[in-house]
Amino acid sequence: MESTPESDPTVVSAVAPPDPARYDVLRQWAVAVSAVVGVAVAFLGSGAVVGTPVNKVANGAFATDATLVAPAGSAFSIWAVIYTGLVLLAVFQFMPSRRSDPRQRRVGWLVTASLLINAAWVTFVQFEWVGASVILIVALLGVLVVALVRLNQSSPSSRLEAVVVDGTMGLYLGWVCIATVANTAAALVHAGVDAESRSATTWAVAVLVVAGGVGVVLAVGLKGRLAPAIALAWGLIWVAVARTSGQPQSAAVAATAVLAAVVTLGSALVVRSRSRRTVSLD
Image (cartoon, rainbow, N blue to C red; front, side):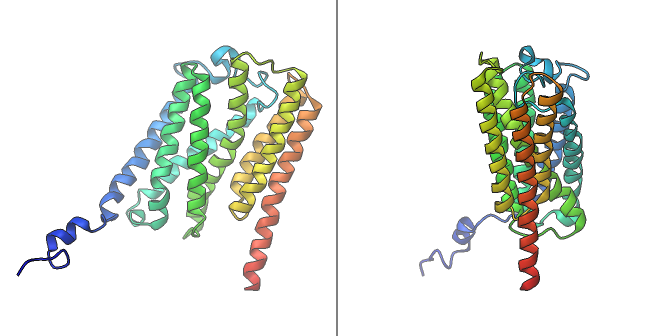
């Protein structure tokens, strides 16, 4: 009797979907290795050992006094928290108990991609490829948005996971939002745009209004997650500090940055409160 696709085990195995478990170990190693690479490249790219400090690259295009939307230097200390969290995340997901965890399967490759894109961004900046660095940071932003959306599909299984995975990725996303604004402005200045003209002030205010709008969108879309709001508000507040305590100064830009920070945090708190109230009523 002639075999059919339904009766032939060879055919069935050929068309069967791949077993996710076969790729779990590969995913775990990819996250772990990319975390090491990401942290190492970031350390070297900071100029601490080799290379040029980012604020001195490209004739100071990334310096705090280069554009109206550049945060003050202290704002960048958040990277220490984010990188620490990413290392802890890599360790956490590498545990045998997390090998087949559905949440890690959903975001593991995205975490890897974010770390490698970030490492590439540092490398591009060191080579003063400022325009290309904007493309990379926008790509990084997109990857992080997808990662947070996927994490939002289910709740963390423990408080440790909530802090190490969700908290870290949330801070990462929020900071990259404001970093994208600063990076784009740096690229424009590097291309010859006057950072202190009247039109520059208008554009800076408009961009910060959009940043506040992004904070609202993140709050609603991510159901009131606090970590992205905290990191975005952190960056906005340091933009205000830079515009009141350093050069170039701008009261309008500083006030807009503070307002955007308040809107960002406030919207996250409101959405979070309403979500919890809905759950309690159910």
